[in-house]
Amino acid sequence: MRKAVAKVEAVPPGEMLPVDIEGLPPIVIFNLDGELFATSNICTHAVARLSDGFFEEGVIECPLHSGCFDVRTGEATEFPCEIPLKTYNVEVDGDDILVEFD
Ligand code: FES
Image (cartoon, rainbow, N blue to C red):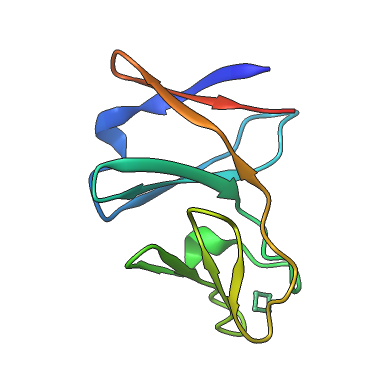
């Protein structure tokens, strides 16, 4: 199911935006140098919201134990995270950000 989740201007380059839509998994939209990516907002190590962490150079650092993930692929890049994050396809339609949910 493809859903409009936010306006493009809500996520400037270098920023992230948590999106919580009832009935759908919580996700984060990342703007990496103008390119948009989306991942689950819940760390795979324990229960923490990644959008409360730090987004820098394509990597999201979890606020709880400082594990890291590559936002482009979901790959876990820093201990103690080992399980990849779920990623979602993102498209832009006009000024809407569309995300493909399963
Ligand atoms: Fe994210 Fe532990 S909960 S690194």
